[in-house]
Structures are given as C-alpha cells and as structure tokens.
View 1: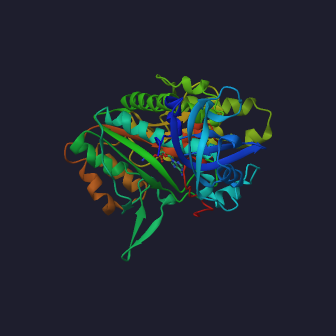
View 2: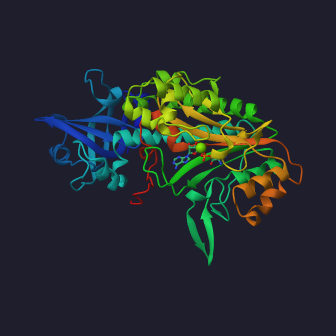
View 3: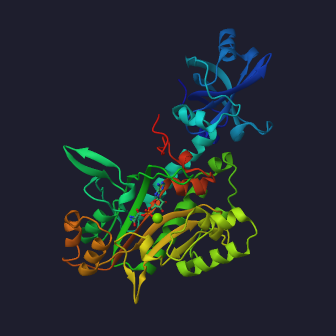
Length: 445
Ligand code: 4AD
Ligand code: MG
C-alpha cells in the first residue's frame, strides 16, 4: 500500500501516489466521471474517478457510494486550481478505491435541519463541516491555554470533582449521594488551587465544571470546561496583566493554526487580529454609568426593559452586549459590588461595598469569558464573609487554615472554554462549542 497521508498535509505530496483513509462527505458527477468529497478527520478533499482509467467494478463501486460510507482511496495528488468550491485546492486522481463499509441512509443530509433534530443526533452532527471546524478550534484553544501556562511557570494540579461545599454560590449545586452523605459536583477548582499555590506558587486546574443553572440562555451549559490559574503574590493589576497576555496568546495561536477552520465558519477575523494587550480596563461604576446612559438614550422599549439596572446588580447578557459594542477588543470590568460576587473576594480598600473582582468580556456582544479576583488573605475577614453568606463553617475549616500558615495576597481567574471558543469561532451558542453539550433540557446523547 502506498503512503497513508492526512489530508491536512496533502500539499506536501503533489505528484506522488498516496492513500487516504476516510468517509464520503458528498458526491457529484455523471457519465464517465465521479467526484468524491472525502474527509479523513484532518480535512476534506476531492477524489476523482475517471472511468477509462479504472477497472469497471471500481468505477461502479464509486457510483454506488452513499454519504458517510467508509472508503480508502489511492491515487496521485494533483493541484486543482480550476474548480472553485472544491475544498483544499488539491485532488486525487483515483487509481484504486476500497469500500470499507457502505453506509446506510444517513439522517443528516445537506438540506437544512432544525437544531433540536441536530442536537438529538449530536453523535453524527459532529461530522458536519462546521461542527468539525468548531471542535478543532476548541482543541487548539485548550492546547494554547496549557501551552501559555506551562511556559510561564504554572504547574497543573488536578482538583476534585466531588466536593463537600459550594465554591460559587449555593443556588447552582448538583447534589450527589455519597454513601449516604450529600456531596456536590465541583463548580470550581479555585479553593483547592488556593491550597496548591502554597506548595507550588503558580498553579492551574483544567477540567469539567458543573452548575445547575436553570437558565436557558445561549451562554449556559450545566457541564462546561474551565481552566483556572491561581498565583501567589499577585494583586488585581497583576491578574489583569496576566489575563490579557494569556487570552491574546490563545487567540493568536488559533489565527496561526486554524485558518482553514475559521474560513469554513466564515469568521471575520479582523476583530481577532486586534486581540493584543493592553485591554481596556473599565470599573463597574463607569460601566454602570455607560449602560444607564445607553438605556436612557434608547427609544427601543424592549431594549430599555432589558437594560434595567440598579447599582449592585450583576450584569446580564444584554448589559454586557451593549458594553462590548463600544470597544474593538476584549475589556476588563473590575470592582463589582460585593453583594453580587462570591464570598472570597478581597474588598476594595476603604470601600467594602466593592470588591477586587474582574471579568473579561469578549467583543462583538459575546460578553463574559473569564471571572476572577484577588482573594481575601486575612483570616478574620474571611470568616466574617463566610458567616455573612450563611455558608457552613465546618466545610471551610481547611480553607481557613490557608490563612493561618503563611497567608499572602493572591489572585486567579477561570476561563470558560465553550464561551471562549464560541467567541473565537463566531458562533453564538455555547452548545456547539462542546462535543456533547449538557443543558437544562438535554443530557442525550
Ligand atoms: O465567573 P465564574 O463563576 O468564576 C469562577 O468560578 C471562579 N471560581 C473562577 C476562578 O476565579 N478561579 O466562572 C468562570 C467562567 C465564566 O467567566 C464563564 O466563561 C464560564 O466560567 N462559565 C460558564 N460557561 C458555560 N456555562 C456556564 N453555566 C458557565 N458558568 C461559568
Ligand atoms: Mg462570573
């Protein structure tokens, strides 16, 4: 058998005979010629069957192929500049075709399908070009996240998924029966990372995260992936500097490595090219004023209703959307009211109603992709906040210990992978940024 080659590397094989192992994506042709669009997981390309050059049974087998049949194609690689719309610019002049399995009638055809149907068939939908492109970008985003942290002194630490207490508020906990006791699926690895920094200085965890979110928005999954760095001796300013470096690296990496996928998605990449430090820093108070002004000046009653806001409220999706429209790159919103954020956030000096939190909002209306803060390092203050939030003190004994033995100012953030991928890939619903999304209404397949 000749060289087995991945379609993404096909340009290196012009004039050579190669073998492609894949599946039939689509087929056209008539008379003496058949054009097969073959995908192999790394890309998609055309294999041409020309009747006079082939044994009759091979040409006939090609004609009978159904969508998603498994095929192995052998032939010489040629440049194909002539056919617009043919992916890749290369084709194989087929010398042999092996049908590994003739597919049954495939439910997802090139016609339009409803999104519920597609989600019900997610195990098949992931083969479609756009979903393929999105999930390839997701893999690059995940790798680029690790890459930046691994080369900046961060040590990866796994944090538990079965946890005894809430990390991010009690309203979104999934309960699990643990031999008769109730434990919860992790909402964050942060609290454990706060222990880890005292051994390793700079750490991160990366894994699935669970929130029993009763919201049906395009931004909420019940299971999503989050990467959470935590850094000892880092204040809020240091945190923002780190986040902008980190996110810029991720976006630039995708631009370098995933151009074909961004093209499949028809993503306008100009706003991605802007993603370089520094990102604008906007205080909550300033953001609050700007949103209030937009609301007052709007003559759209629906928008006015959506943008209702009182000082102390967390921003919702409509507020973030309006705010990000004012900028050409991601922004930081820092200094949120203490009441709308988690118990562990360091208060602003001389302004305890505000805390040293920061969210990063992605442009073009995408909104929050990271949430983070400087953490409380003082034991008495932390205990006071645990009481104020009615959290069970016993479950936090170990966490309180961290403030007794060498406590230092420290900070960290969590970046949601699906929201980040949805933004970079330019798709509005986070469910397409996860291979098998879990939402309020769906845990199948
Ligand atoms: O803002 P969050 O809740 O922050 C934390 O969990 C902190 N403990 C992180 C830290 O400081 N180590 O969540 C962080 C990010 C959000 O900005 C968002 O991108 C994503 O996680 N996220 C979700 N993504 C999809 N579906 C949901 N239900 C999400 N909830 C949060
Ligand atoms: Mg948040």
